[in-house]
Image (tube, rainbow, N blue to C red; front, top):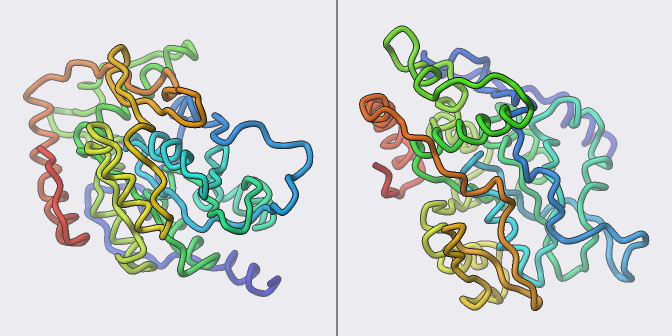
Length: 313
C-alpha cells in the first residue's frame, strides 16, 4: 500500500493540447475564498457521532460527484442522501484538486468520510474536481473502477450563476464587486480569462477525464432537468450506482416561495441553503448572446464526446 501511495503522489499529468483561449496551465482553476460555496460545510448526514456505530467503518468513496460548479452538485448530494444505502460526506473535501490536501495522504482523506455500514456506498462531492488538471489521474490512482457523477446545466446559465455566487459572497465579505458585463467583456471582446467562462468549456475538461476513465464510468446528470423534476434523474443515478430503487416522488415537494423542489424524508422537510436559487442579475442581451455563440462549438464537441445532447440554448 505504501508503495502504491508513493507512486500515486509522483504521478504528473502529461501536457495536452488546449484551445488557445485557455491561458491557465492545464486548465487548473484556483478558487478565491469568496468563490467558495456557502453550503460547503453543511453536514449532509448530521453530526459526526462521538463513537462509531457498531458495524460501521470509514471507507474510501465508491462514487464521487466531480462537478460541475454551480451545476447542482449540492442538490444532487442531498437528494441522494435520502437513500438508505448512501452515506454522504459532510463537506467538500478538495482532496484531489488541492495540492496541500493531497499531500496529507490517503488516510487523511478517508478519515473525512462518514461512517457507513457494509451494505452502504460512500459518496463525496467536490465540484472543483471537474476542472482540475490533476484530479482525474489522482482519482484513477486511488480506484480505477470508481463510478463518477457529473451534473451539468446550460453552460451560459452556469456562467451567470457562477458570477451570482461570487457577487453575493464578495458583498457579504465587504469586498468590491463588478457588473457581470465588465467581467464577460474586455476591450470589446469576450474575456476568455474569466474563470467562469473557462469552467463552462465542458468539452475541454471532459477530454481530460476520458483520458483516464471510460465514458461508461461517468454518469452525466442533467442539472436543468433535476431542477424541473428531480425523480427521473435520481432514478437514473440509482441504476448507475446499482442501488435498489428507494427514492420516490413523495420525497420531494415544490416550494412556491423558493421556486424549486425541497426534500421530505424521515418525517422532516428541508430545503437547500438560502444561498441556493438566488435570482440572477439581468445581463446585457447582446453580451449574453455573444457568450452563447462562443459556447456553441464547445457544446457540440462535448455532445460528440459523451454521445448525447442537451437542451442548451
